[in-house]
Every structure is written in C-alpha cells, then in structure tokens.
Image (cartoon, rainbow, N blue to C red; front, side, top):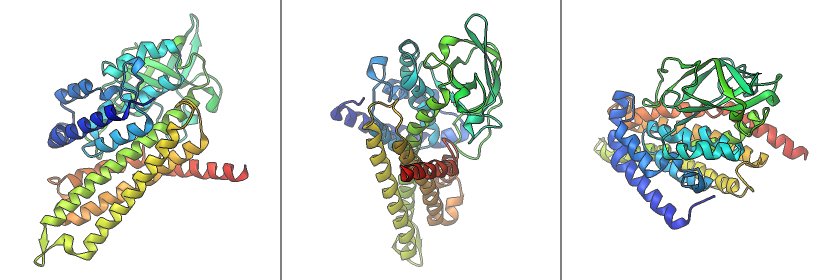
Length: 390
C-alpha cells in the first residue's frame, strides 16, 4: 500500500511546514505544561496524521513503510511529544489489527483510529516482563458465554491516559510464546484502571502510566485474528515496523540537533573566531553528519526491503534482523550526536534555554523502548547464526 508520489510530496511538504511553523514554536509550552495543546492535536487529526499507515479503504492515507519513515524523519525534528500523540495509532497500537485482525475487526476499529476519534495504545510490557516478552503473566481466562476475563498489570504504556482502546497481550494458555493472545480491550471496560502518570527524565508531554486489569471481561471476538495463541507473533511483526519507525525518528532528531549545533558554531565566538572555524569543533560536526548519513541510508534501504514483502503481515527474518540493525545503530547514533551537540554549545548546552538540552534528555529513551539495544543485538546475532548455518 502506498499513495502516489505527487500526493505524498504534498503531504510531506505540509508536514515540514507544520513542524517548522506550528510545532517548533510550541516546544517550550509543551515542556512547561507537560502536555500537547488541544488545538495542535485537532490540527493533527485534520491533517490525517492519525491514519498515516491505515489503508484508504479503512479511512486512512495508506503510506508505505518507506513513506512512513520519511514522515517520521520530519516529525523527529521537533519535540517527541508531538509524534507520540498519534504515534501509537500509526504504529504499534493499530498495526496488530491491520496485520492479523479479522475483516470485521478492521472495519469496526480502524476507521475510528484513522480519524483520531479513537487513540489506540499497545500494552505488552509488565513489571516483571520487559525485554522477555514471552514471560508475561497477565492472564486471559475463558469463561462461560464465549468471553475472557483479564487480570494483571502493564507498565510504561505510552498514550494510556489518552487511549480509547488497547492492543493488549495476555496469557491464555501454558508457558512460552504460543500461550499468548492479543486482545482489543476498550479503555472504559469495567475493571480496567490506570496508575498515576509516570514522571520521566525527558519527553515531557508524552503520557505513560500503568494499566491495571481486575476481572476485565471482553468477548472472544476481541481476540485479534479470532483465535488464541497468535499474540506473540503478532507483537513481533508489529515491533518490526515500530523499530524502523523509531530509527527514522532518531535520524530526524539527529538532523535537528546537528542544525542547532551548526547554528551555534556559526554565531559563538572565542579567541576572536567563530568556534565553527576550529578544527576540533568541525570534527564533532563532521562525525555527526557521517553517522547521520549512515543511519538514514540504513533506514531507507530496510524500508524498501520491508515494502518488497508480499504483505506487512508476512514474516521475513532477514528484514526483521535489518530492522533491528536500524533501531540499534540509529538510536545509539542519535545519543552520540546529542552528546556532541551539547559539547559544541559548551556550558550553554547544559541550560534549558537551548533545544539541545531537551533533546539530550529525550533521545535517551530511544535506546530502551521497542526493544533495548541489547535485545536488538540478540536478534541480530541469532539471525546471523541461523543464516550462516543455512
């Protein structure tokens, strides 16, 4: 699925102007209020940002992975809170339904997700199951009347306070990955409650909290795909796409940080010269540009390979491995670029009057969610061993 080139170019130009003219000027407001203004959220809905990756026949725009990455790159050039408002709708919140859901599930849920009427969230992580996703303990027990009762808790769930429904993983059978099912759980279901909002190092305006399930009943029809035991595989496919998206965001953030460092290096003078004229400062700028170029090239290549699959629901271990390469390299890369950006600014880079201070805090989370850097290394290493053996 992909919109035609001319339509996409118009969309991308609109997103660029929206970032430059509306979002960047509002960054300090979001930082101070720890929330995204309602009028900006309304503009995002009007632009169709909540339905970027949902096909047109379900009310969305229908971007390919390559196109999605280019939009994510542009959105990375402002405070991450703006992207997070619609990020779960574009990615992990809705993609499970799109990839593995029944036709009835797609028609019921996706149009409202695409319009922004319904914000979806993705609930996998638990207090005792983060990187080890197959070890989740939240239970989904079948009861009379073709229903399931859910009990357990989920942790660090992005957009939970805003969500109207959750793509939620629960154990419906024995231990291991094959015992996990993916449920669509309405946020207003009796017995579902939210913990207090998390206070984070960075990414102010991005809402996360725990989700607690106490005898929450949902119909069996709310199992994604209509049959239990497929949830873990659904989650892994969803995360493949999510990791590429985050890698593209990391590249956009690196570009913004580099732009800020360049502007400062041209203006700041020491010893009678612009600091950008000193070779050691130029070396930091050059290293950042080289790493950004490498990361963005990786993302574009992997996105094209992703689009070449027969369908997004098709598993391709090689593409999954490459998506992990992108996520690993780009999120680590933007951390180094942010560090250099602060260094170029000197003492000013440690003061929150300058955007690089906020970006320095914000980028740290990228190496943790959607699978830590160490999990990406495990995925890459295991697939390399499998390919070599084959």
